[in-house]
Image 1: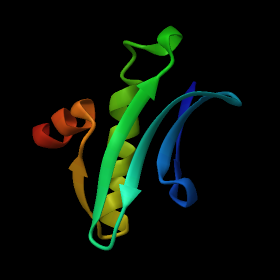
Image 2: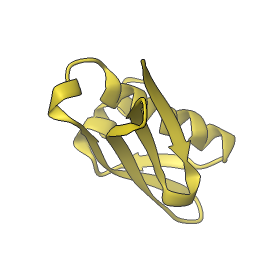
Image 3: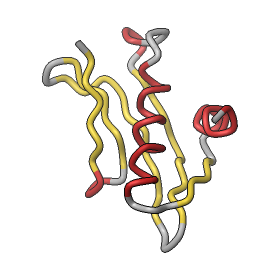
Image 4: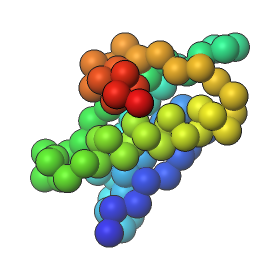
Length: 83
């Protein structure tokens, strides 16, 4: 089972298959915004909705930390605009 973890200290959400990192979504933080700059999933795991779960994890946590979201990452921007 794929687990998604939020790593606030390193500004990212991480996808893990057991102990192996298989993807991540990275953001830059300033006073008001989190800017998602990169989303990546290992080729072996693509097509399973993992990238979407990574972005959604950052969206959920942005609400907890009261941050607005923007995205330079085209995939993350698409997901944010859908919501």
